[in-house]
Figure 1 (tube, rainbow, N blue to C red):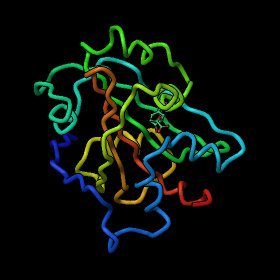
Figure 2 (figure 1 turned 30 degrees about the vertical axis):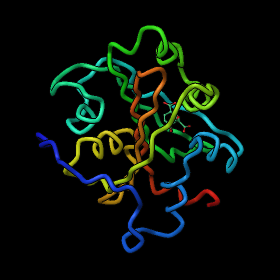
Figure 3 (figure 1 turned 60 degrees about the horizontal axis):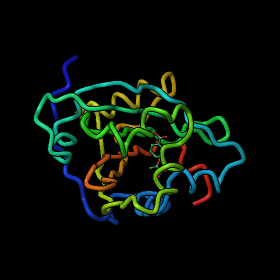
Length: 185
Ligand SMILES: C=C(O[C@@H]1C=C(C(=O)O)C=C[C@H]1O)C(=O)O
């Protein structure tokens, strides 16, 4: 089934009307998501799903200043709290960024990207934006495949932001699975 690129709208602030109040802090906390989850569970882990060259989603490419169809480094993971996946995360790094400052991307393995990003005072996070991804978006299906056979609701809230280090940029997107609400807010 071909999923046509869907141009969703990324909002600066989550709409109050369409969102469970307990989800809102997860979408707006500017700190490390890894740290926030770790502080709310006993056992945290990162399940690496993919780490390879790939063509970003059109709106990801636009945000990173890449041409449509231009390859970039993709890392997709599940953040797992006490054995339960709670976030599907997708990070995109332009290929020319891999050398030098961003070499960390390659050596991470199952260590959380956030632990490296937030440990470096030189790294700057740009403002968060959020959207609701549904079956029209290929990333919804990536998240759905990652958690199968667990079923997902028809739409998932997600957030994203750019990280910058010496003019190089990394785009981190985080899709919140319904199980995130089982953690203390
Ligand atoms: C940016 C962070 O890193 C988290 C860990 C990721 C990974 O290991 O690939 C990806 C996205 C984030 O949810 C964070 O902790 O805030």
